[in-house]
Image 1: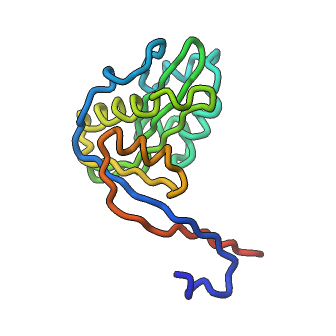
Image 2: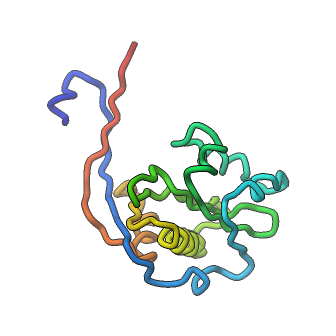
Length: 169
């Protein structure tokens, strides 16, 4: 790849890829006290008092053309603490019984086990709705992401290089 892009400005990073094909534990066993789990659906999005709702919507359209398209073709779960979205886990690139996972925990709620609980709830929903395999990509330097994938029952499949080619007009 680097030879092909020799005369281009490129950025590359080391990444890891994990997959999961079976649910190995229940999200209810790891969800911290004081948090509620909710599906990402029209009812959730109608609650305009939720803190971080706009950030969730931005993530929903990161690989779908609209929120409505996400609701029609993808799925997700979120953790709510009082009136605040603490984190969410969304399906991406759903095709042929597979999907990828997009996950975020808001900064105030990190290091509490919410991401693991969200991932397990996501897997439970995915596997009960026709998904046979879920993939997880992360940067090699993002140890927290890799640890969450492993805690939730994912297996590491490979390391790979990620390239961004900057094209100047």
